[in-house]
Each structure stands twice: as C-alpha cells, then as structure tokens.
Image (cartoon, rainbow, N blue to C red; front, side):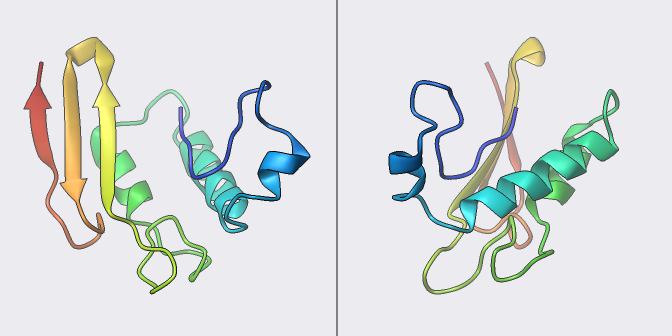
Length: 101
C-alpha cells in the first residue's frame, strides 16, 4: 500500500478534497504504483528504499527537495515481520534505521 498527500479512500476521495490537495501528489502516487507494479510479488525493503528515493519527474518526484515541498521522512512497514524502516529527511540522503516490535 502506498500513499502520498491526498485521500484515496472512497469516503474522502472527492473533488472538493482533491482541489485542496497538493497537485503533485497525484503523479507521485502514480509513479510509486508503477514502481511497485514493476516488482509485483517480489518487492523487498531495498526496492522500496530505492523507490522512495526516486527523482523521476522532478520537481514532482517521490523524493522531494524543493523549498515548497520537501520529504521529511520515509517509512517502510513490514507488519508480518513486526519491523519498520525509518529514514529521517530525504531517503536519498539518509540512512534507514530498522525498528523491531
């Protein structure tokens, strides 16, 4: 499951909410979904780290560096393994720390 900065659930995914969302949120989610699809059934945490560091479509890339909108953290959850991988700041510049629960 991936998300960016707009609602996708049916209850809130409406035009009035989309009009208030960051316009680059939609292409960023499309890009992430395409990257996920490219590894369907075989996605590993290292793949996700690479995807979250993606700069395709800059300035509307998944990993953002501009003054208007900047990536502040990146989180990869592995619920079945009770782990989370967290990078503070841009994932292309930060090291992921793994937390076990």
